[in-house]
Image (tube, rainbow, N blue to C red; front, side):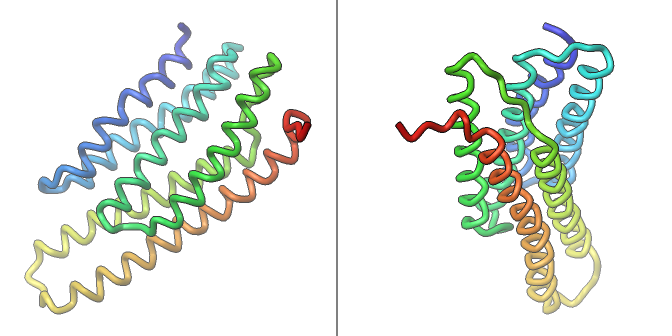
Length: 195
């Protein structure tokens, strides 16, 4: 197994640690989750860069790299729903898109073709990563604010403002998710047979 594929596998291996850091409440657990998420996101950057520069692009990499991205991002979104940090409807939209795209990939694979992610898929992933980082930064900021000698009466307003900012960032990324899914389905419509 080459280095880019190992990095992709590492990204998947980091997911349980990432989930634990989000869901197990300990001081600055969102900071720990952000560190793991950052490391996992860097593997996404490096696996593709190394594969292209060293001509190590493989069918395994074309299939597993976007799958690893989906596992990481959807884990974050589902944990955010559980912690009350994002709307479940948003996650349903993202899941619908991911299942539709994965279905086309499976249909293509059944015909011996491997369909790599397009530029819109990469834009979608980058906007999702940015939105997730924004939510982590907001939660870390909130934890710092709770340590300061501030009037506790301001915290409901802070929580509301932070939730709106996080939701806006996630919905912007979800718009790119929808656009990329539509373009992907149109570009690969030859694999979808109605017969």
